[in-house]
Length: 512
Ligand SMILES: *[C@@H]1O[C@H](CO)[C@@H](O)[C@H](O)[C@H]1NC(C)=O
Ligand SMILES: *[C@@H]1O[C@H](CO)[C@@H](O)[C@H](O)[C@H]1NC(C)=O
Ligand SMILES: *[C@@H]1O[C@H](CO)[C@@H](O)[C@H](O)[C@H]1NC(C)=O
Ligand SMILES: *[C@@H]1O[C@H](CO)[C@@H](O)[C@H](O)[C@H]1NC(C)=O
Ligand SMILES: *[C@@H]1O[C@H](CO)[C@@H](O)[C@H](O)[C@H]1NC(C)=O
Ligand SMILES: *[C@@H]1O[C@H](CO)[C@@H](O)[C@H](O)[C@H]1NC(C)=O
Ligand SMILES: *[C@@H]1O[C@H](CO)[C@@H](O)[C@H](O)[C@H]1NC(C)=O
Ligand SMILES: *[C@@H]1O[C@H](CO)[C@@H](O)[C@H](O)[C@H]1NC(C)=O
Ligand SMILES: *[C@@H]1O[C@H](CO)[C@@H](O)[C@H](O)[C@H]1NC(C)=O
Ligand SMILES: *[C@@H]1O[C@H](CO)[C@@H](O)[C@H](O)[C@H]1NC(C)=O
Image: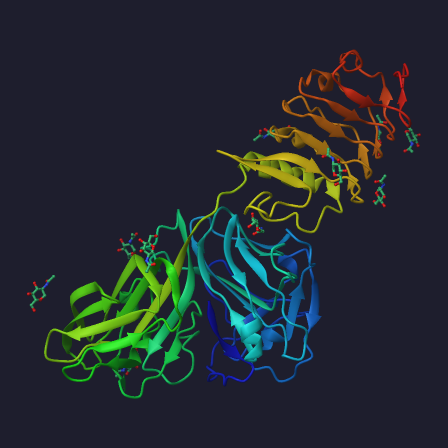
C-alpha cells in the first residue's frame, strides 16, 4: 500500500502540453462520481466514471481548494454484505495494466470511512482501510499490475461481510496499459503485483510522476541529507525494461568513503512472503563506473555490480522478505556505492474464473431480463464469497453455477433459452416476478432438481422434454398464464412434487 498525496501537499509545475493529454493504448482516467470531465495540473483529462459502472451513487465532498481535483467527488456503493460492485473496461487481451484507485472519504469531521475489498476479475487483491490516512488528512492510493484476462477487465469493490462497516467508495481510478517489457520478469500467467514502495533516493522534492513517468507511476522522495547527491547528466531510460523516468537518475544516495550504505527500505515492515524487488543505478559522474555488492538483509542480492553513467538495473522476482528490510551497498572498487531508485511489489496469485460457458450463459440470461441485481457484473462466482446475488457456485475442477435464485426481486423480461447452457444447475427459481414469454427447452439441465417459476406472467405450453429430466423433484408453475396440456411424463412421475394450478389454462385440467 502506498500512502501519499494530500490536500495539503504542494503540487507540481505546469508543463506546456497539448490539452487533455492521454496515455497510449487502452487507458482510462476516471473521476468517480464526477458530473463532467476535469483536467488536472499536469494536463491529464479525467472523465466521469458513469459509463463504466452501473451501481452506486455519486456524492460531492464539501471541500474547497483541493489540489487534486479528482478528490472532490466519490461514488458510494450499498452496504450489502457479499456484493461486489464492478467497473468494466475493454482491454487488449494480450497486455498488462496498472490499476491505481484513490480513496478519500473527507476530513476527520465526517463519519469514519468503511473498509472494503478490491477485486480484479476473479482475483482478490487487497483490503482497503483508509482510516489512518484519513486521520493524517491524506488520500489513500493503491496500485497493482494485472494481466488482462480477456477482452474486458473488471475492477470491483467488495462489501466484505467480515468487516463491521463495509460500504465501498472510490474517488478516482486509473487503468493504464504498460509496454510489454515493463515488469516482464514476473510470470503474469500465475501472479499479479501489488505496489509496496516506489522510491527516488536522495530526493527531497516533489513526487516524480507524469509526464516524466510515461505511466504516471509515483516515485516518492527519500531524503537523507548526509548521503544525497544530484546529477545533471542524461540517462536514457529506454535502456531499462521497466522504463523508469529519466529524472529519477538526477538524485542518488552515495555511501561515505570506506563505509557501506545502509538503507532501511521499504519504510514499512513486510509480512513473510516473496516479493518483486527492482533497484536502479546510474553513476552520477560522466564516463565513470564503480563496482559494489548489493545485500538485502543477510543475503547477497547482487555481487560485483558494475554501475556506469549509462545506468543499470537489477531485479529479483521471488525474493523472500519479512519484517523490516535493510538494503546494504558495499564498495568493491575505489568509489563509494550509490543508488538512485527502487521498487518493491508484493506478489499474489491470479484467481480462477467461472467456466466460460456458464459465464456466457449468465450474460445471455441477464440480457433478456430487466431489473437484475446491481452486482450482476464481473465474474459471476469469483473470488470466493463474492458470487452475484442469487448465484451459488461450486468451486471444483471447474467453477460452475449450481443454483440461480432470483425469487421476489421485481424482475421482468423473458427467460433466455441459453439458460439451458448452465448444465450444472440443481436449483432454478424466478418465483414471484413478472417474467413473460415461454419456458425454454431445459432438457440440457440434466441435474436440475427444483424448478420454481410460479407467480409470473409466463405463457406458452410445457415442453414434453421437461418430464425427461430424471433428477427433477419439485416443479412449481402455478400463477402463470400457460396453456396446452401438462405432459404425461410429468403427471406420471411419482417422485415429483408439482403445482400447476391455479392461474394457468391447462387443458385437460391437471389434478390438484
Ligand atoms: C523482457 O523484455 C526484454 C526487452 O524487450 C526482453 O529482452 C526480455 O527477453 C523479456 N523477458 C521476458 C522474460 O520476457
Ligand atoms: C540531456 O538531453 C537533452 C535532450 O535529450 C538535452 O537537451 C540536454 O542538453 C542534455 N543534457 C546534458 C547535460 O547532456
Ligand atoms: C517465512 O516463511 C518460510 C516458509 O513459508 C519459513 O521457512 C521462514 O522461516 C519464515 N521466515 C520468517 C522470518 O518468519
Ligand atoms: C567479485 O570480485 C572479486 C574480486 O574483487 C572476486 O574475487 C569474486 O570472484 C567476484 N565474484 C563474482 C561472482 O564475480
Ligand atoms: C469471511 O470470513 C470467512 C471465515 O473466515 C471466510 O470463509 C469468508 O470467505 C470471508 N468472506 C469474504 C468475502 O472474505
Ligand atoms: C430461493 O430463495 C428464497 C428466498 O431466499 C427461498 O425461500 C427459496 O427456497 C429459494 N428457492 C430455491 C429453489 O432455492
Ligand atoms: C413477491 O415479491 C414482492 C416484491 O417484488 C414482495 O413484496 C412479496 O412479498 C413477494 N411475495 C411472496 C409471496 O414472496
Ligand atoms: C448455449 O446455448 C445456445 C442456445 O441454446 C447454443 O447455440 C450455444 O451453442 C450454447 N453454447 C455453449 C457453449 O454450449
Ligand atoms: C405470450 O405473451 C406474449 C406477450 O408477453 C405474446 O406476444 C405471445 O403471443 C404470447 N404467447 C402465447 C403462446 O400466448
Ligand atoms: C393470458 O393470456 C391470454 C391470451 O392467451 C390473454 O388474453 C390474457 O390477457 C393473459 N392474462 C394475463 C394475466 O396476462
